[in-house]
Length: 624
Image 1 (tube, rainbow, N blue to C red):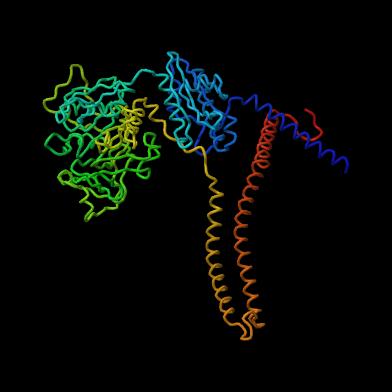
Image 2: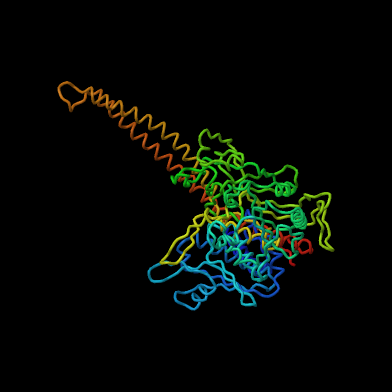
């Protein structure tokens, strides 16, 4: 017996030593190896990001400013911070030495804190003593250029890879991208014949001009320059046939286009005339790209109507001027995620054409309380609030903006239109060579200042304050399409934080049972109390404080029943806690005992198989 016990403990000790040895061997032999077993591959770089890393011409320094000790007080923030750090390490390891990662925990009033501020990483004040929490990323290149993510917002964790890839791409390609810009609206300023003064450029245009190399596209241009990164078309109703053909050729070559079409452009109104109806030239191009657009109708929305000043000065709801909230803005696309409001004025609608071969992803849409209105009727209304009288919603959600991608067909399958002469040496494309990337919106007035900018006077200085996200939408769209195709291909991943779906399911099921049981028992309790009230009215005639023995017995019965009901209610709630605790115990057993045992047995089986293949003896008493 003693010998058998000794052998048993010896086997346990040998197994423990074997596990420790295997762990040490694996740490050295499998260094750098990793397997991403997360459901949405949170730590696996997309193909576009890997190509961006391979294309870095010169080393880039990344500085991750992270107040780790402060984050330890908030478990969710600490978990996300660790995820960001691990993701940055993965990016650095995949960059072939072109990414130098520096992880810095800035101390209060330190040189590192000053460096974070200088590089554009902002700290969040934590107390009155001046301590700040840092959770941002800055990058520098060899030409003293720098980019920064001021703060990693946990609400945008799905776009973590895109934001970091965009920062790296901008550092690797520091020159301003060229943007060809055509606008049928007075976006760039100029002389205003109504006031006799110079007109200020729209804020959206000024912001874009600060970040990109804007070039005005003439309405009769016969070619789109080859180095154009993005083509922006705002209310392109008066384009010549030659320009439409040039746009078609640019699209077939895999161009990046942002188009703002409009069935009724309020900001295109001329003196003495009303809003200008949309043309059909762009509708032909959109149809060849798989987008159906009707320039003859606008969308009225009763649910999203904004209050605007009417002809008499009184405010009233205008169903043609709508304010979109987060419920009408896609939170799954990088250019719209995080935007909380977008305002539109007499917008049209878009839809996908079946069999076009392109993908169509809605970005902005109406509420179900919407209906189409003929554009000429909408233009003739002195007070659009009159549309609310007899309003008949179709129950359909109309798309105001969409992302379209894929290889497109030519809108001119027979070649250039009649009378169009191509520049010397220009080759005609009859089919797509690369996929088109298109962002299209059925409203151009949305870029006008009056829909999203409030002008204030601060101590005599003019101040422009955005009260809607229209300008950010344009800048996000330019930011997205001005990058390479690799950057555009980086899609948003699922969120890092995941709910405990099994626990929530248990809780929901238990609460459902609890509500049903509670309703039934409360009904019984109500009946019990009614019986008690009835007993109080049937007292002995000799005293109002004395009950008959039968009444006292029945009263005790109902009191016991009340205690039983309360006990059963508590039992249901306790059962919920036990179910969750049992699940937690099961997970602990699996993680602490079962999984290590499985890996240990797998390692032993692998070792035994290798020894057997080598012909080594394995039976007791034999020597190797």
